[in-house]
Structures are given as C-alpha cells and as structure tokens.
Length: 153
Image: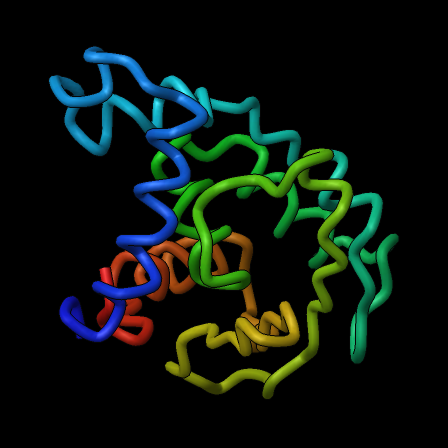
C-alpha cells in the first residue's frame, strides 16, 4: 500500500517543498508538521448535534438527550473516537463539526447486546435503543473502543 502512492506523493512533496522550502521541514516529524498545519481544533459537539438527523428517534426525546449528554461530557479522546467511528476521521472538517450531517438511526431495541455500528461513507450511526442511560453509555463506549475500521491507520 505504501509503495502504490510513491509517484503521486513524490510529485506532491516536490511541489510542497517548492512552496514551503525551509530547513525546518526536514527536521520535523510528520506528527509535528501536522500540528503546525492542522492545530488541535475544539470539537464543538453542540454544532454537530444541531445538524444531526434522526430515523426512528426524535431530537427531543430523552434517549437522544441522554446520548448527546454522554458525548458532550466525554473526554477528548472519546470524542475523537466517536468522530472516527462515524465519519472515518477524528478531525473536524474545515468550518467545524457543524459541516457534518450525521444521521442517528435506530437499530433494534431491548433485549439486545448489540453494539452501535456505523456507515462512515454516509455518516450514519446505527444505534440500538437500550433500556437505560447507563447501558447506552457502556455499549457506546465499548463499541468505540473496539472499532476496527478498515485497519489502515
């Protein structure tokens, strides 16, 4: 996989160095350069929530209020895992999270041990309706921690 992009990346690298020719780029690691080019953004989950759509749920029902409460109070690492889980990227797009229109779709009800799943291409979260907020939080976090994705990290 790495060798398949050598040609196109080589051209990109040559052009990048032509525009940004500096000795500093040769001593920075890729993650340090990323921090300079794309500094840590505030992940505004309220903006994400405002653009969310629902199927099988409504925005004002308690279950969805609990879902957003869990996410907005989560640690930054968990928020990034959620973004990666639903969109395929743990970074906010240019313009912030309000530019993403996720769809939260009901995917079964109790009794279930099913974990949430997602369709990253369409930004769809398939969320079972669990019986309690505690189970919702436990299953959501378990799903995020064990998500494999395409394994191209």
